[in-house]
Amino acid sequence: MIILGIETSCDETAAAVVRDGTKLISNVVASSAAMHAKYGGIIPEQAAREQVKSIIPVIHEALTTGRRSVATIDAIAVTVGPGLIGSLLVGVETAKTLAFAWNKPIVPVNHLIGHIYGNWIDNPSPPKFPSLVLLVSGGHTELVLMKGHGQFKLLGATRDDAAGECFDKCGRLLGLPYPYGPFVEKLAREAKLPIANSQSQIKLPRPLVNSKDLDFSFSGLKTAFLYEFKRNQHSLSDEFKSALAWELQSAIVDVLTKKLVLAATKYPVKSLIVVGGVAANKKLCEEMTREANKLTIPLFIPPINLCADNAVYIASAAFFNYKPVPWQQIDADPGLDIKRPS
Ligand code: KG4
Ligand code: ZN
Image (cartoon, rainbow, N blue to C red; front, side, top):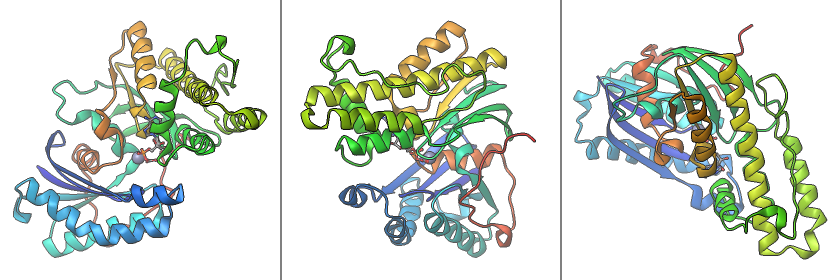
């Protein structure tokens, strides 16, 4: 089955063609990040305006680079949420229009669940179930038990800010460019180790790291970072800034890793999955790999280009959770979530 995926939940406009949920045929992503970089963050109205302009060219490019005629497309998959309402509407209404005009089935996809399927692309040995999923993006930090395709149970989530949000706000404070997370990682790499012997002696908190539940909290870490930054505001050396970035990254990685390990001790699983934009972080990947090896549970993290938002995993998620809905019943849902069991 050939699925055309469409993704516009944030500032990317993405389309992809995927065969049988696993074989990447084409992948096109247009980003308005350069425009947002000027303002230091996403301006939702501007993002949506750019998406309106680029959605048809992006879909056209996905079809032509994949050498696919419309006739060979079996279904359309589209992200319906969560995300920015104006951005979501561009993808959803375009997908509905094409489904109507081309007379194709349309499958609504939850963006968060979509991220997970980056691990099924061109992977001859995909994750086995049950699986523990750590989802770390700009707006979400969640631990999910995946018993099978379409069987998700939310085990824990952030009580306030997401890990990505923490990277972003602290990166902004450090004066780094948008999109902040990768630049925090780059700055942290420049830190002179060991940090304990440097001028800084910085120690940031690891919120909820020893709590017995599977929840997260990053707003206190953000505040602690702000105080540490302000305390040293008048003598901010490059060395101090990189040490601060290193300690921030360590604190976030420590919490995420320990919580995934705790979840693995509570739930016997056959695989561990880490997805979302923050899964592109190398230090997070290294620590997760170390812990997964100790637990002797296979770990899956998508290749870096499939960690960031794209339509490939949206098409894949639609294949493995194939529930077409009449186009009249599909709406953008910015607050869509993975629900805790009641
Ligand atoms: O999944 P994603 O691309 O978009 C959302 O659905 O939110 O995640 C974006 C988040 C941002 O907070 C970004 O700073 C973070 O992922 N991110 C990183 C890295 N690359 C992206 N955070 C830390 N290190 C990175 N290398
Ligand atoms: Zn995302």
